[in-house]
Amino acid sequence: MTWIAIAAGTIAGLAAARLRLPGGPLPLALLASGAVTLLANEPRPAEPPQALGWAALALLGMGLGAGATRLTVQRVRRLGLLGPASVVVIVVAGLLTGVLLGRVSGIPIATALLGTAPGGSGEMAAAAFSVGASAEVVVVMQFVRQLLVMAVLPVVLSAGLAHVRARRNRATGPTDPVP
Amino acid sequence: MGVWLSFPAGAMVGAFVAVGAWQLGSDAVPAQLRAARQFGLSLLGALVGIGLTREVLPLVTQLLPVVVASVIVMLAIGLGLAYVLARSGRAGFATAIFALAPGGLAEMTSAAESAGGDAGVVAAVHLFRIVVIVLSVPVVASLAGSLW
Image 1 (cartoon, one colour):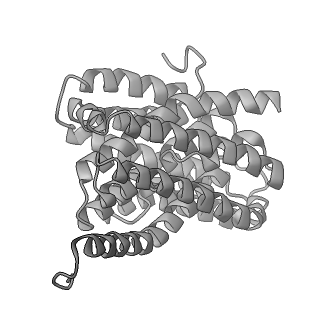
Image 2: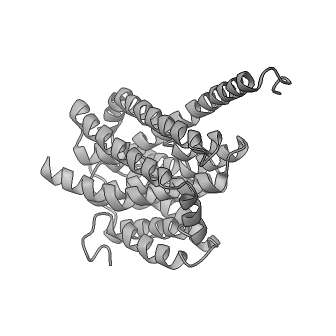
């Protein structure tokens, strides 16, 4: 049954990638494979070969490394010290939130840290898979984060832009209405 | 090599370091490597899904409120930093917001593009953040897991 679950999950993930579903292939692959496992209702599903996990991790690493081009470095540099410094603050905040979440909820600290770290959901799930944390909980936490950000950000952006325009209008006096 | 060195998430970190070092001398992202990532994500999702047993489902529901609260904290920090970055004049408002929001790389890049931000900068900052996290958080999580 393990192999059927892996096949179902991989096919569902590739379909999600093809259809460009939000969240990418990971959530749908997990749901499909999880559904097969739950339906089979085996008390203890057989462990997949370790090499398969390494292969998935290596493919993810290759994909991540592919984006690290000269152009990427130039773009980050354009932001000066403030860009990288902001990223470091976000990473540290993510770690602190993870420690706090681990304390409050009682979930293992490694799972909490990887669940709250604002890395890619795939990369964090891969890390969880590798260090023995609960990868399925990490995926759900990462997915909730991405959904929430997607829902909140457009509202914040339009409010922020309205604020910037209003301030600009106040500074320059009454001008044509903003479309 | 990453696995052989027993580095946390060694297969991913090792492959990232090798391909990243090669790519630093290039400006293009090969399509095969993009496809490799999609396949890797699908396979990983399938492998993780096997652990989705009846015992895990209630835990996920129970965790939801604290997870939402932690995301709100992260979002507020990201927005605060984006405000500072936009005020510094190094990036536009939309670019700063989407670059420092704790969302997914692909989603934030396309949203920035449709909001009139600089999608290239947004993608670069997200990639930089993910790289910093991939290189640091598995080590911290592994250490914290063995200490606590």
